[in-house]
Image (cartoon, rainbow, N blue to C red; front, top):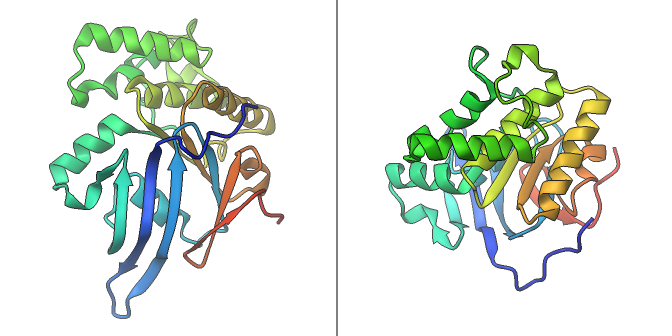
Amino acid sequence: MTASPAPSAPPVIEFRQVGLTYPGPPPTQALRPGDLTVRRGEFIAVVGPSGSGKSTFLNIAGLLDTPTTGTLLLDGIDTGRLGDAERTTLRGRRIGFVFQAFHLLPHRSARENVELAMVYSGVPREERTRRAGEALSRVGLGHRTEALPTRMSGGERQRVAIARALAARPSLLLCDEPTGNLDTGNADAVLGLLEALNAEGITIVLITHDPAVAARGRRTVTIRDGVLTENEQAPAC
């Protein structure tokens, strides 16, 4: 495992008293105001039980929801000052998502699934094809570019999903329970891949309810009752 990034590494995400309250009645404070900095090259695990606020954190960090309090910066950009279209463009260019359920189109090849993620970013067709091939090779699937997801194992499908997230060359890889649908062997392989990508300099935030998975990160943040707490190690069950 590589050494932790120096404190001088530029921030990718900054939460400055960021919180979110859903309107009522009665109002529900899903994420209490708090601070968090994720620097370039870090691998941070966000862990907590169901209903703790992990999904709210994911939605805010991924620019899917707008916080009701505080300031969220992505690569130094104050996202609160952006309109909806600008937020969508920023999200597409700077954040790669990896979800538990893969979200692959079953009748499109691995290459096509990766390419489709770049269509709305305005990447030319030839460039999309080149990047897709590179991303699939990077996750160990260079020999499976034309395979359909229906002919792949769960671990392979998740690797395609990771390749899709990497193809846009994002600042941040945001992973939501990426091993939740995998058996132990495939889960370990996917976590090993994420560790290898982090060693190459990819910034990763991994959200999980499993302390054993969280332990693979280099820094752990716990969410309980909407409160963010930083830890040196993943908490015990």
